[in-house]
Image (cartoon, rainbow, N blue to C red; front, side, top):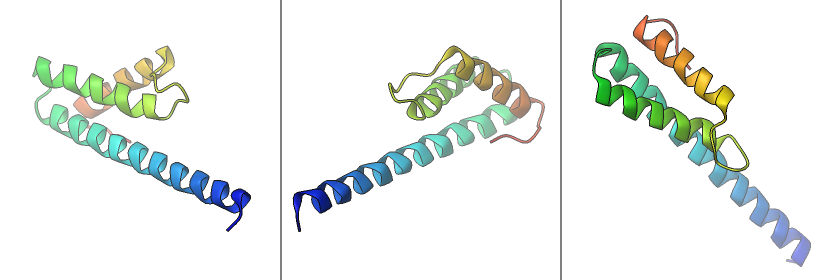
Length: 88
């Protein structure tokens, strides 16, 4: 296997791992949203849900950081979960 093929395989592997991280972060965030829907007044759970949302949305970004727009989306997701609307 030449260098080009090795690099191509390495990139595919890296992208697959990144995809796995994103899916895992999404699932964790979704579960926090579901729990918050059941306990909407639990402030510590709300804080953890926000942190999980920032982790998930950040994993979608090149720099790994959630943006201000992501934070608006997190608030929207939380409101939808608490109002028992469809989430993610």
